[in-house]
Image (cartoon, rainbow, N blue to C red):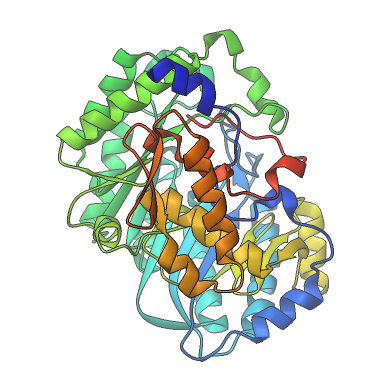
Amino acid sequence: MQNSLLAKYSGAVPRYTSYPTAPHFYEGIDCGKYAQWLGELGAGQDISLYLHIPYCDRLCWFCACHTKHTLKYEPIAAYLKSLKREIARVGGLVSRDAKVSAVHFGGGSPTMVAPEDMVDLMKALRDAFAFGDNVEISVEMDPNDLDAPRYDALAAIGMTRASLGVQDFNPKVQKTINRIQTFEQTKSVVDAVRARGVHSVNCDILYGLPYQTLETLETTVRDIISLSPDRIALFGYAHVPWMKKHQTMIPEDALPGIEERFQQMTRAADMLVEAGYEPIGIDHFARPDDRLAIAARHGKLRRNFQGYTDDAAEALIGLGASSIGQLPQGYVQNMPATGEYERLADADGLTVVRGIELSEDDRLRAHVIEQIMCRFGFSFNGVRSLYPQVGEVVIAEAREFCARNSDGICEIVNDDFRLTEAGKPFARSVAAVFDSYLANGKGRHSVAV
C-alpha cells in the first residue's frame, strides 16, 4: 500500500512556503506599489525583517539558494553599502508605530560578514526601524567562517537563535556535495554560541543526498541528537539542476530513489521522536519547551519563506538581492542579480522587480494550504467565518477530493478536512489540490517526499 501511495503522491509540487508561489509573481508589482504597501503598515502591526547575504566562500553543490562564490571581501563590502541604502529607504517608508519583532540573517553565508560590519548592519536596522521588546535575532551560520571576533559580534547584535546547516556528517557524502564540515566543528559552534547566551540552536539535516544510506543518515541523526539542539529541520534534498546549474556536479546515479528517500525520512523522524522531539508540520522537530512546539500545540504555527515559525508578524520585509517580502496586500521580490540590485539600491533604495497582489480567492487558498502544511487539515467553519463570500468553493473542492479518493489519505470529520496518518507524509501533494495556479504555471518543482 505504501509503495502505491508513493508512486501516486510523490510527484513534483511546490514546498508551499507561500501561496501563490514565486513562479506566479509578475512584473506589474513595482517599487511604487511596494512603497504604497509599506506606507500602509502602522500601529499595532509587528514586522519581521529578513536580510539576504548572497555570498559564500565555497559553493555547496546541493544548495538551491541565490548565492555566489567569492574569496574576496570587496564584493561583500560593496554589497553591504547598497544593502544599508535599501534599509534606510524602506525603513523611512514604514511607520515608527509598526514594531520589529524578529530579524533573520540568511544567505549565502551571513557569517562571512566581518565582525565590525555585522555590528554596523544591526545599527543601520535599529536606526531605520522601530524595534519592539525581546526581538528574536537569528543567523544562519557556516562553521568554516567563524572565529572568536565573529562570535563576539553576533553576541553584540543580540543573536538569540543560531541556525546551522549540517546536511550529513559522512565524509563521502560531504565530498560529493562539496560541503566539508566535521562533527567537531559543528559542536564547537554550538558550544561557543551557547557560552555567549544564545538560547536556541537549530540544526538542518538533509536526506536524499548522493551516496547517503539509512546507515549514514542514522549516524548523522545520532550525532545531531548528542548536541541537544532546540530545533531540528529534516529536509529532503531538492534536486533542481535546471534551476541551479551547480547541481549538475552531483552524480544523479548516486541519488537514492523515491522509496529509499521515504525510508530515510521516516527512519530519521522516528529517531528524533524517540529522542523526545515533537514533530512540527512535515519536516521540523522541536523540544517540547521550544516556542515552535508550543505554537504548534496551541494552533499558532505559521509557515513562511523561512519555513515553520512561531512568528506572528503581519509583515515580513525582505532586504537584499532576491529577497521576498510578504505584506498584508501581497508579495514582492527584489532584483535577484547582485550587480543590478546594487545599482537600483544606490539609485533609489527600492529594488522590487516583481510580485503579486492578493485576491480574496488567493487569501482563502493561502489560508487553507497553510493550515494543511501546519495542521494537516482545516476547519470548514473557520473558512466560512474568515471568507464568507468565497469559502464554499474550497469546501466543495475538499468534499469532492475526499469523495473520489480511495487511498485513505484524507477524511471529513465534524466538518473538518483532515489528513489521515497515511496521508500526512503527502501533505504537499494534498495542498496542491487547492492550488488554482499550479496547472497553468511554468515553474518546475522538486519531488514531494
